[in-house]
Amino acid sequence: DIVLTQAPLSVSVTPGESASISCRSSKSLLSSKGITSLYWYLQKPGKSPQLLIYRMSNLASGVPDRFSGSGSETDFTLKISKVETEDVGVYYCAQFLEYPLTFGSGTKLEIK
Amino acid sequence: EVKLVESGGGLVQPGRSLKLSCAASGFSFNDYWMGWVRQAPGKGLEWIGEINQDSSTINYTPSLKDKFTISRDNAQNTLYLQMSKLGSEDTAIYYCARALRFAYWGQGTLVTVSS
Image (cartoon, rainbow over all chains, first blue to last red; front, side, top):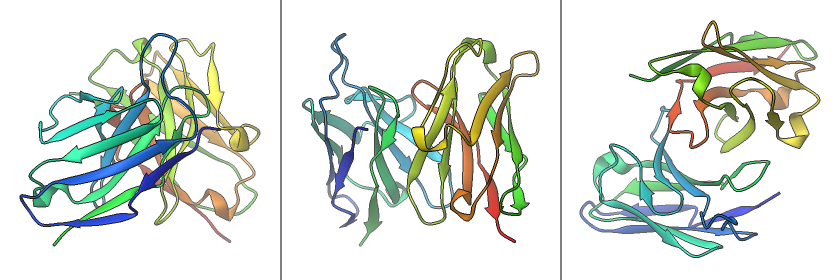
């Protein structure tokens, strides 16, 4: 199985500042079709997960452009610019390259 | 508006079975893969499996393949998860989601396995 390792476990951010979350894959997530199958989700407290970023760097519909995704074949970063209080929750990366699909263990974002 | 509503959760005794449902609306259900994800209390997300449009392909996470069965009824716009031989480790919120990006999720249904 592909293992996704997220860091840090938690991050505390002052509103208006930026935050970055790392996700490292045990295997390249670049497919033969040139697509990098890395996804980012946010689970707000008491809510279902919501898609933020698909295929490493594409913003999902309705997601503020304060969120951005980048990376290589195995190392990925979610950046949140100008963090707002509504951004609190747990962020998960996920790989959809091969079965079984797997998620990272999550990074909790808190507001200072 | 895409809507996914899970039902069927509750308290179940160890060793018993339970069937969850996910009612879909707001999109053409038979055009999409559908999947299940679960989350144990205070834990992360675990992919259970997913099913293609005509049920000809179903993929499972290996550890659950012999316990869980995913099915769908396109006429009823409903996804199912049949769970058997339940143990305490299966206590979790169970979410259905529209694959392949999991862009839409239901609100989840809680399954508690306890005597």
